[in-house]
Structures are given as C-alpha cells and as structure tokens.
Amino acid sequence: MSNLILIIISAILILPGFLGIFLPLLPGIPFMFMIALIYAVITKFSILSGVEIGYLLGLMVLSLLVDFLSGLLGAKMGWASGKSLLIGVLGILLGTLMLPPFGGILGMFLGVLVGEIYFMGRSTTAIKSAKGALLGALTGMLINLLIGLTFVILFLVFTL
Image (cartoon, rainbow, N blue to C red):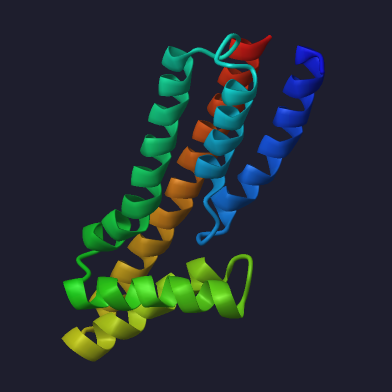
C-alpha cells in the first residue's frame, strides 16, 4: 500500500477525534494520537519518527490537562467550593449520558449551581461559580479545538 493512501486513510480516521473535543466522555485527541501511532508502527517509524510522535504525544497530554482543568478552574475562579466542584463533575457525567452531545456542559453548570446553593447556601456565589464553570469549559473546548487542528496539521506536515 502506498504511503499516500496510508496518510489519507489515517487523516480520515483522525477526523472523528474532533467529536471528542466537544463531547466530554470521548477521548478526542488521545484517539487522534492512537491513529498517528498506528500509522507510525505500520510504516515502521520510517516516515513518522519517534521525535515527531513525541511532539504529538505532548499535544495529547496538553489537551488532557486542558480537559481536566478548564471547567474546574473556571468554577474555582467563580469561588466554587470543593463539594460543588464534585457535584459539577457528577453533572458532567449525568448530563453527557442523558442529553448528548452537550448535556455535559449543562450538567456541569447545574451541578455547580445546585451544589453551591445546597452546600454553601449562597445563590449569588452559586450563579457566579456556575457561570465560571461554564466559561471555563467552553474556553477549554476552544483551546482543545486549536490543539486538535495543530495536531492534524503537524501530522500532515510530518508525513507528507
């Protein structure tokens, strides 16, 4: 099989990884990385070197950090309590399962809001915390979209 065909197939297989950027439970950029790694193994690292895989791995690790921290940092900047953050994480999971694809964002917002009202009894802080969580999550998605685009561009530059 020619290298160009493998690159095209790999690039097509990488594209669904962009869904994971917007759906919290799908591993978008880790999926992209696995496709790139499979490509490197198939070509015996003759086209995509170990150093280049390292760059792509770095992008994947960065995206995981952004995923994990963005909503929580946003909520924390809005003065959310630790208990409210845990309820927000539960809201992400339940929201994603009940209202895919964007239920996770709504679930986090409502989880932080309800958690803050229940545990702290402050509706003003609750709204501020929930808005912070929402803005943090949306900012994280935007950052991960840029990381995903960078990943695809680097993959194509490295392989072509």
